[in-house]
Image 1 (cartoon, rainbow, N blue to C red):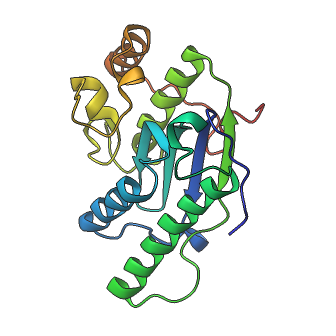
Image 2 (image 1 turned 120 degrees about the vertical axis):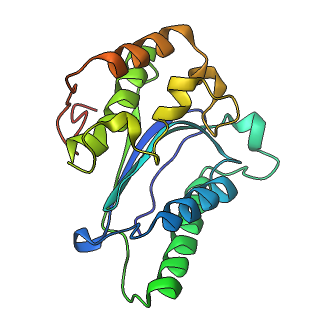
Length: 196
């Protein structure tokens, strides 16, 4: 796995497909196992803004916490990527034990820095939520259970979503409007936001 450069306080969109398009999450319990590992490894260092787990790939939109908030444990930015590697390895171990798999589970992913512009963040959250419908997994993305869409539609304060975005009135309005529109707002599939 390539060492990605992550910076304190920066926002990132992570997209990771399964190796050779194989299923990352064959059964429902696998989604929950992955989310549990996210809580263990990534929640201590990042704010989650949006996610979507699909059978063959996943998207995460998050912001690494400021150095002052996590320097007691992660004083070097190189240590940040180690948390992601730990999560990926733990999920690969889980998957190999559960399904007797061998070889690499994840294909080369894409980690893109996202400029901190509220409108852009909100549009990217909408795109991430719409992924299940874009890829034909469901006919209406609002009912896909393994994304943050439900947390936004209900403003669920108990969710893993960072409250600064979840409860932001501008972001909330943009996401709710997208959820009430009938047509998908498709940004360029999996090459999303190529200009960054």
